[in-house]
Image 1 (cartoon, rainbow, N blue to C red):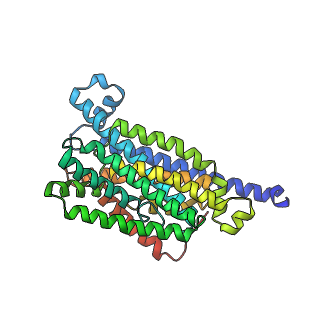
Image 2: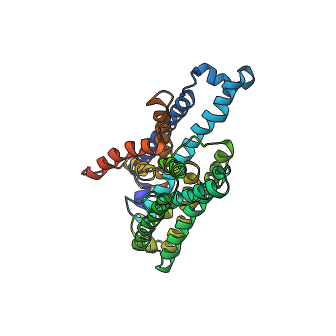
Image 3: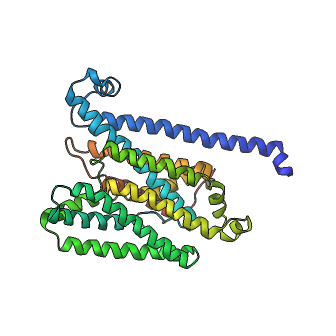
Length: 351
């Protein structure tokens, strides 16, 4: 009680909170800037003024400019923000509940499961339902990604939410789905194989307003559900035993969060393909800046993920004029050096 009433502690805590909020506000500004650059960037030759006119006064520009901005650039730019935020939140919560810095949807097999579902749909569509494979691919990718998390959930539930069991189950499923994916590729035709590989590279080019709306709705539902458990998740970083001593049902919370994570990941991955390292790197950046307090850690993770993927989207269009690189390649090239820097770093400075 004395510590709560100590004026010095109150002042220091206030400064700490304001500093964290300032960092979040600064990153929001950077994210807005990245979003605008992403919308302005492209091979069509539109100027920033013409893009802004198309956004705010669509009737004042020609039909081609309107289509470029509203059908292509805006959905892609917004999808980059949403997918980055979704994968970063999923990764941050997976690292929290499993207490493992390598935990992410990518490393625990969710992306591999989505790739298997997508490749299965591509082959089936090419052979039996030509012309509609673009519609069934995201559905199958979502179902298999969600199924993989349900399998992990079921295995974890049998062992009462053991972190070791969940991690090992995820790794085993990653190997399983990668093997099944290789099997499908082996029996695919050249056209089918090309489509599968392109999907596995990851791309924002298939972004549409309905897909943006679906992912935005999922985020709007899942984020408050995760935020409602913020203090419990923060307590889990103290260890299972201490969290239980505070009255937290650790096993139930861990399994519940797995369901939320699976919905977020499956929805994001099914629309854009395999995008690696966002779920690992973004939470580490946020953790180094604001620590483990979920009130700041989760929103900053989301902002970092959105910023990284928005920046990757800009790079995809800027490396070679007229050529759009697969975004999964860009995120890996960005993420691997940064992740190695985190691994070899001797210490982390938390605020």
